[in-house]
Image 1 (cartoon, rainbow, N blue to C red):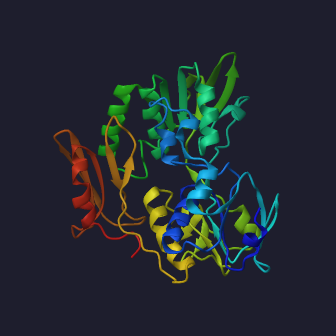
Image 2 (image 1 turned 30 degrees about the vertical axis):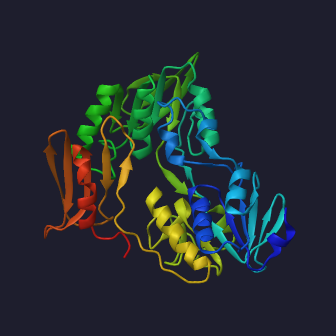
Image 3 (image 1 turned 120 degrees about the vertical axis):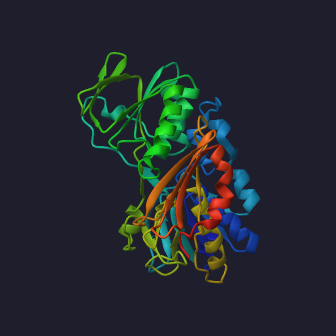
Length: 389
């Protein structure tokens, strides 16, 4: 490791090599080619598109094929120092150092791009340790190995990731059961009419739904997993994938005395409660918002790069629709803000559906577009208020 780089009082140190970490580096390099940057990651340091993890099976892509640039290529391209497969044990903000299993690293400014972990449900049964999650490329490789030569996959969770994996798996020829405590798919994002359309399309492709219930036990019985549901039903499966949601990684920040809520709490300049320590991406909470999507990460990275290169810049979020990767029915979602007052109005159109969430005085606060209605995405986005002005 370049000791001069690590000891520079102006050095920027970034923990995390996901989309947030690498995007903020790219944005910094657009503004400043010289400032020393060290990226510290417990992963191998390569760059890949995490959203592709839930769409790669149907395309028959293995984990290695999803890597777009290896670590040495990223180091050369961005002119940075990468410490791969390196665990960070603590942040010493008084001395402005982080401690790692490869020694202490000094920083001028520290960026936490730690990401989030898959939530694990408290399940019962002798096969609980066989439940898989897919949160990074290594997880995806294990999942690909687990389903090789198998036929049936059960998915816990009918949210965004659960629906995307369900679509990908049925396109890949698997039988898929999806289990969720909610009464519908994408329960936190879309109205009932839109959920019905998506469920019908996925059902026709081969997905079986189990709503208003949860898993009680998962037991290994010879070559199959026996899943008992709270409603008394039983499902046999080869593999169980948990996709019930994400929780920001907070342990490192908490241990350093950095303020946390749902995520690592930051101000509009993305600075934490500790000076010169910043956070963005899936681990960060900005004014109560934790938004684990690509567009908010890009917005945050652009703003933070300007701040880190000497011009404090407040983050703003425009309306940012999310594309749900369900090829059986193209879907774009821009959910209303939490606590927004209004009603959903759903209108079938030829080959699709348009659902508008409108305030009592008729202002558009959110939408869902499906099928041919997705052509209205740009026009409706312009009508929406910003997420964070």
